[in-house]
Image (cartoon, rainbow, N blue to C red; front, side, top):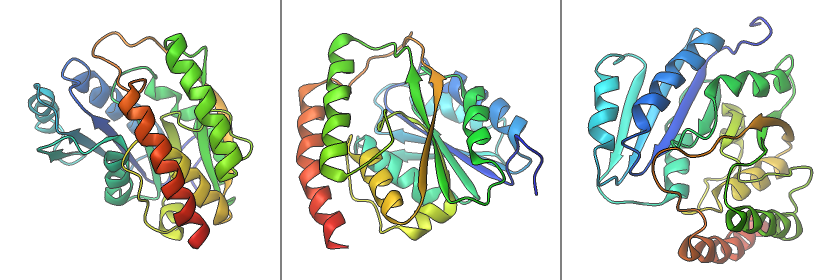
Length: 242
């Protein structure tokens, strides 16, 4: 049994798409935050078809920490959902944490999620929800409508911020559910719905959210939103068929 506030082992992964100004800081922060909560750590940087220097800058960190950090790189942008899917599938340790590569969270706040896990005996996912969300009004409105739809259509209960990219998941949850299929923004909703149906508890805690300093957000673009709602119905049919 690990002491309170620590994990037996931890995989951390981060999707990056054109985050050359953020990737080094995120990976260095992950190394520090992860090492503070476990003695067995792996970090995976997923370069999702970046056309800037994201890969080169990630590689500069990997060279310094080759035993802990690895990079998975796609030549073309496959989408956020595909990157998260591959991160979950590629993570090998007992707990899996993922967040975005835009530095809108402080990774040391993983301790807030670990507190939710208690003794580790309960089957649960520890989820963050954004406190004082630092996004545009349009992005926050889209998120509110999306969360409402997910509760009604997929039956996700007790989660106020479904697509918050600050999640700690036991490896056994990923092994207990069918392979995820979402390619875009539906990935978190599909993950939570399938894990809930497999008997896992969803438990949330607030995590501070910070303004994006570098790079450009894409989640509020019409194409991203439309793709998410199209995937919603495909996902619903798939979940109901299992």
